[in-house]
Structures are given as structure tokens and as C-alpha cells.
Length: 115
Length: 112
Image (cartoon, rainbow over all chains, first blue to last red; front, top):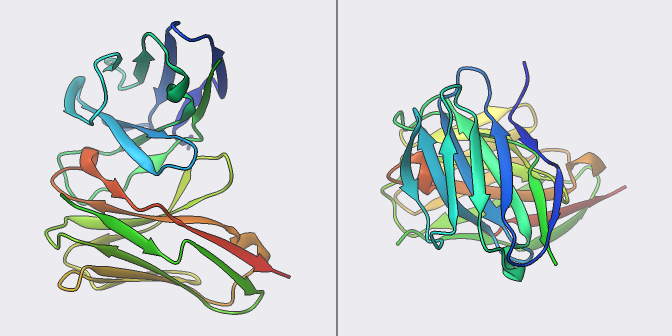
């Protein structure tokens, strides 16, 4: 069974541009989570989508946004890129975020570099 | 606000020794705690999930304990191997999965 897949693996953008990152959850999982892991910092929660709706949001500016499609895949969009947005962006999925004891599985991440 | 701390930040042991990794959290009102492994530049691999009602979980050479009252979890890796070299992260589930709070991780090096 395929795990969580993220694309692209690497992305290089210029400051001020927009970046779109994609995530496909494990089959049957309805919840998708996005995290940012900047160099030297821990994982910071960005967004949680469940059943097509945004359920929770971390402490990030509005230029970080996303959506979840009917097939439960998800996009993370980062507008007006800044140099400090350079990081590894990780996507995770779980069976459902409303059941507290489900295990989360992570993808391999997208390395975003802003120059 | 939940804070998760992992000590030590780095650890180096010779092959064959047992590893003991610590995770502490400030708010005992947790739903679960999950241990992950991360190789350099890669995503996270789930190792063990402990429900709030459990005291420990085991998988092969790995054993994780949870003491909610004292705000601690410990990951034991028996008979370490060079392939165990990675960063180990603990994450605490609070009011929802979206608010999983991660520790900064313990970087482990197992020398042959």
C-alpha cells in the first residue's frame, strides 16, 4: 500500500513568487496535516484538513493557505514568498482527526528554497 | 500552552548499547504520544503510538513508556545498531491531531 506522497520533492522559487505543494494521503485517510520544519527549528503545525474542510490552523500568516479535494488530497499554497519560508514542508495523514487515538503517517516532504 | 522537551539533544553510543531517549511535557492532559524517527532531510517515520490510557508500547527492539502524571515518556532501543542513527522526535497530541506538539528531537549516532 502506498504511503503519503508529496510532490514536488524539491522546489526553488524567487522571493515574492507563489509556491504550490501537493500531498496525497494514504488510501482511506480523510485527515491531512501540514507542518513546516525550518532549519534549526522544530516542526511547526500549519494546517489540518478533514473531510474537505479546514479544521485547525497554526500561527502562520494568511499567505499560507491550502485546500483539500474530494479525493482527500491536499494542496498547500504559499503566496508572496519570503526567504524565511525556506524549509522542509511535511504532510501527514490519518484515518480521521476526530478520533483521538489514530496514528499519523508522514510523507517524505517537499524542500522549498526561496532565493 | 503545551511544551515538549527532549533531552539530551544529541547522543552517541557504541553499537550494541541500549539507547534511552527522554521526552517531557508540561500539560498532562494529553490524548496520545507518538515517537518518530527522521533521517537527514527526510520525512518522519512513525515508531510507536501510545494512547493516553496506556503505560507502554513495544515493537521489536523498541519500547516506549508513558507516565502522564509526571509528564514523561521514554523510548528505549535495545542493542543499538548503526542503522538506528537518526533524529528521534516525540509528539504530544492535545486537543486534536492538528495540534500535535513536537519536541526538538534527540540526534542519535551509533558507532560501529
